[in-house]
Amino acid sequence: MRRILVIANETADGPALREQLVERATRGPVQVFVVCPALNSRLRHWLSDEDGARIRAEQRLRASLAALAREGIDADGVVGDADPVVALADGLRMFRAGEVIVSTHPPGRSNWLERDVVQRARAISPVPVTHVVADETRAGTSTLAPILAAR
Image (cartoon, rainbow, N blue to C red; front, side, top):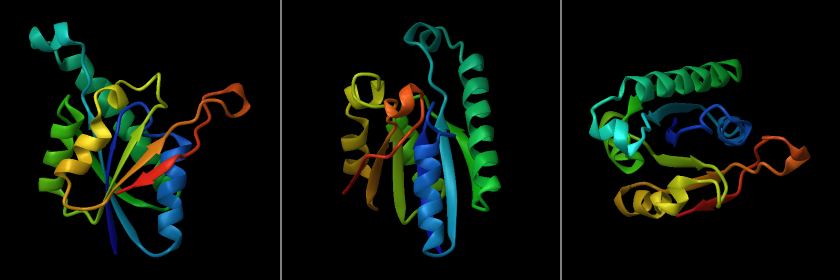
């Protein structure tokens, strides 16, 4: 069974990520563990006001797990640390993954790409890291399509 750890924020329930997971499931059974970081503003983090961030992350996580369940994919997950690389490290301790997928918005819109999260994830991960990028240009909507780069 392939064990896949997913780190995703706003793209957690998007079609690009879901398509990648469905494609992997067509090659054999998969078990997915989704970590949605509880992203917060620096001010709110400094003030220890994390309730809203955790609630939003929990909503994204539930939407992602529901979408994967509709596709017949066995998935579970947690709300993670605000830093996606720390969330990844925590996820790797909780779930013995054979692959990591980091899902982001496209360049220019992704704070994670500006912070070099994908490369930092590859630096700490003992397993291959695949990067799925949302493509918002298709049909002028926020439809997503993957752009992949694996370790």
